[in-house]
Image 1 (cartoon, rainbow, N blue to C red):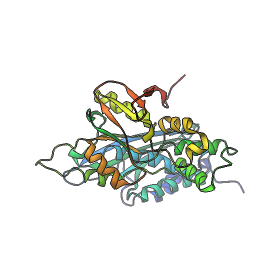
Image 2 (image 1 turned 90 degrees about the horizontal axis):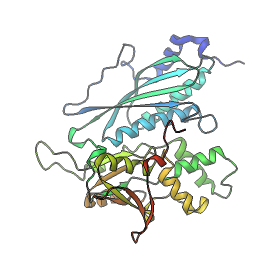
Image 3 (image 1 turned 90 degrees about the vertical axis):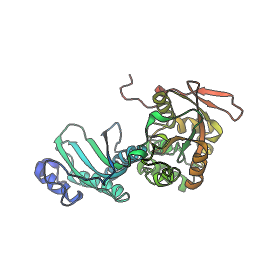
Image 4 (image 1 turned 180 degrees about the vertical axis):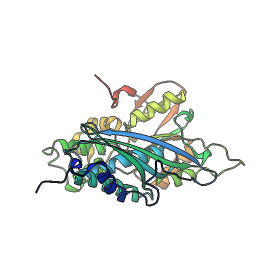
Length: 339
């Protein structure tokens, strides 16, 4: 039996189906109306994903593509210190695409959102020769708890909230199924899950904010700089340093590599994937050492202090003795529009 396509049901038929995935009572007008709590600010982020660039049949099902799209946006909210209110979805779709693919995409999106008490509150659908997914996520935050890239200070500790390199390992296994035959099945599935179903680290925020109880009224901004590591750990540290006008040293022996990764691909490749693999969606935070140590203790063994912010410019990977291993550059990570 031929599958029902988008062209068969038309724009209004598709919108009627997709409204079932949205928050009831919010969609149906020209725009959604959301009211943050008193004393909160609205935080907005947008992410665009293209078939063949950010996802593909070989690496992600429709549901996984939906999950990853939402996770990427929620991770941006977490990196700002915000919690989600809802999101809108813009879709560009070929008319010959099966309707079931779109429904599965939305199932993946709503599954991810459900974990964080958020919902789809609107969007738009247009015809396109390439599947395009544009998501705008809305979040709320307390003004003095907003996290920015520009506030890192010399002497700050650099904290990562979890291991890096797992998503890149999962991508390798999906692109080359013949690789990793010597991996334990649990490790193989953990790597693949890290790529297909990443976790935005919104759970870190309560533990982070608990380190900074307001000591004044009105409260002063908390001394934390941060962003997520969606484009790689090295990229995040380099961007924070460039925006803050500081440098950094990352301690090679403290990088939180996933268990089994070094044994599988070797230490050199494991370190490269942890620095430049991207799409791990952990938070990279710069804050005073006493608070950093308390935060890592609360988050558990997967979190780590991996370096420190310096007055001297440049971002360097160093050994435990301080010997320089390599200079880390922003351009070494993933960049759109590279030749």
